[in-house]
Image (cartoon, rainbow, N blue to C red):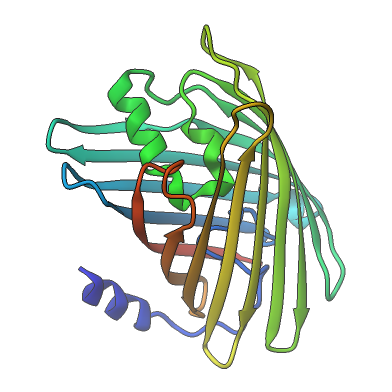
Length: 264
């Protein structure tokens, strides 16, 4: 499977444009006028009775008239396979607005969103969403069943010749929950550093999501990403290592592949 994907990625024309640095675990939002992305994360688990987990994300954003005000949307889909059951379900849809404060070296992106309770609420469906969410801690709110969340975030980017940095920080606040649940606010932090030696980028990423309050879990992951700088469509290949096994359901490793179309 990997060989055809790599061959397709290498066949794409090389890009000379440089958008906001984008990793496998960072926020999907960027500074492009239009962006469309698809990301696939394949999770492997330690227990022998779990086969695999798969999360597929479809993302889009656009800025009005190429200006500072924009909108975005995220649609996640999860598939979870064990010896006892196999389940495919929709996750919680994330919709929101963007405001870009742009400078030449350090753009700053503000984000305001609403996560809607579109995910399945059966035990198997909620298990599928939570088990496959380890590769996208930035969007962990999309895995909570039957809940609505407000999202606030800020993302500064920094460029310096071949080096670049990205930071995402924000809060997700549950404004509607299922009976008997008490979801605490989610603090999310992503940090990424990258290097562009040629027609590709090498990235190191650290992601953290912490449920504040009594009994809340803190989960984190480390990722290494290769991005091939092709014109318009940029593919990436990532290795994601969860650093919080217990809270993430004994996920050993996640392999991610994605494509992102950008129009400036």
